Each structure stands twice: as structure tokens, then as C-alpha cells.
Image (cartoon, rainbow, N blue to C red):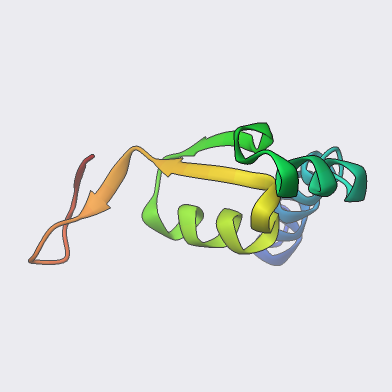
Length: 77
């Protein structure tokens, strides 16, 4: 039986949010005082970079292994 696409996307987002819960308010205070305390996340897509940076805020430092060139195509970073 196939799962609906919406349910799969929701499951992925839920897992991501649960992982970010480990970077709670006490961790935010540490990051505010020390930028090197931010959680390092490496993603595959520039879109994921944008989403992870938005959700994680100051608690994460996100790096993408791909980026867009002048033509809008994905290339290795």
C-alpha cells in the first residue's frame, strides 16, 4: 500500500523538527555567547539549506554541498 506524498513529507519534517529539539533554549543561550557552539548541519540542496537555516535559527550552522550557478543549475560547492 502506498503512502500519500503529504504524509511522507510530514514524516520527514517531523523527524527534522525532533532532531532540532535537542538544540533547545538552553543551547540557544550557549550559542548566543559562543558562535562555535552552533550545531553543524550539512545538506545536499540549497533549498534544504534555506529551510534548515530558517528552522534552526542561531542554533545551527548549515552548509550545502551543492549551490546554484549563474544559469540556475545545481553544481558542487
